[in-house]
Image (cartoon, rainbow, N blue to C red; front, side):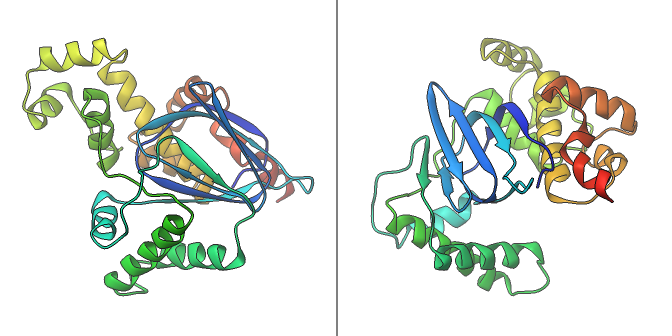
Length: 253
């Protein structure tokens, strides 16, 4: 949820995802392509892509969207029995999805929001049911993953954003020398420190939008003991303070 209109640059969607827009307007841009969602629309996004994202408030001053992302194992399990289809590349908008589709998405969210509430097999089934809906709409996710150093590090850092990752430790995990890792990252236009900071800030953005945790708590969750230093880094990355996401709600409290 957001309580002010905001634009996010170069947001990386690492895994296949479904975004269901409840209130407001969402615009995504990538490589010269543009997708626009209105309230009631959904969009399926192939993993391993970066987007510029603009979220705008509705006439009532609301913005709310639900994201679901699938683990590779869940997709592979579904593909074993699903009809063969063309894997999604880029993204695909579903205009004004049905109430049944929304109910299926809500059940999937409920299944993973409270891990203790349902048996794991039931939760998997609910997520697979949503993949069936997407398959009927002609959307099939792929489990193919890029093997760039950048993508490998993003997946590794995402496992624990707060962890004190170091170049020697990461190089050992990837079975390469530090010099080789540094060269590969340089050739891909990034660096170890910038990549770690970006994963942490992206995770922080998700927590700011989807939880009520205080900013100081979120700072700790992404590896910053100092909330002020975290806020500075967040502003450098996105162009606005962490509190901007929640500003209007707090003003009304």
